[in-house]
Image (cartoon, rainbow, N blue to C red; front, side):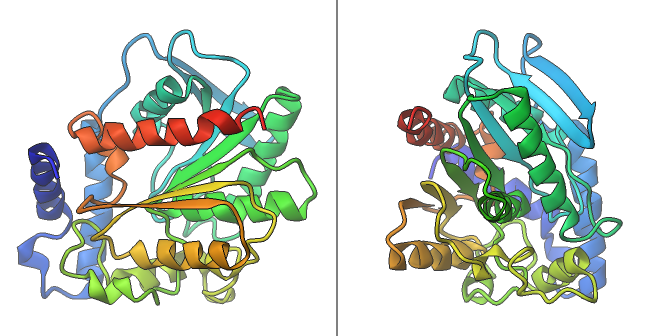
Length: 304
């Protein structure tokens, strides 16, 4: 782990899991987490001034095109942001979108999906599927890959299931970054990595999951917990996750499922990396390397 990554991890932990709140009630810790997310937005890195950004709000589809200057127009990366299904949007992920565009030599579409608790599952999946249909119509024949981080990683997998079940052309590949695939909070690493986790509250995961599902949908419904879905028929999948994350178990279980059915996948466990370290790529070399690895994974698959 680089010195830069160590310093960033330390800062994230101080912000999101301060020692002063260690024994505070869960609702107090949850309120602090949400407040910190919102407060972080003005301080997130911004892309270079020459980045091409185009807002989309048409036919029920909302989002942003983000492209580094001169990238190919015949490749699309469809990206779904994280934020526990309750926070986020294209703007906080715009700098990451630019980095992905530059590394992958492709246009990036950042989806702006409806958020919980006002809009619970399956609303984000409906938005993602509508956007995917729109991309297919807007750019016929152009290859698409899909990616997402944290909750957006879960949404990426759930959307791939929905694309398959709708008999639409599948994306060429998927990349799941620190994905939240099981909102029941039952992965073994929720407990095992509780002390190592820099950002997420182990006790808060099931609570956050319930905020997404509401009181009527089971937490293990494959639409909100795609780990419980059928993984057959997926395109090649790259999973990138940190070794100390409480969500590591979701990725391990998913990789086991893919291996059991002989599906093409790659699980990369990054030692000591924090949750979605790609968002820290301006500061840490590991973030830049992970993005470069994504690009190398996608590169031969665009034309398959």
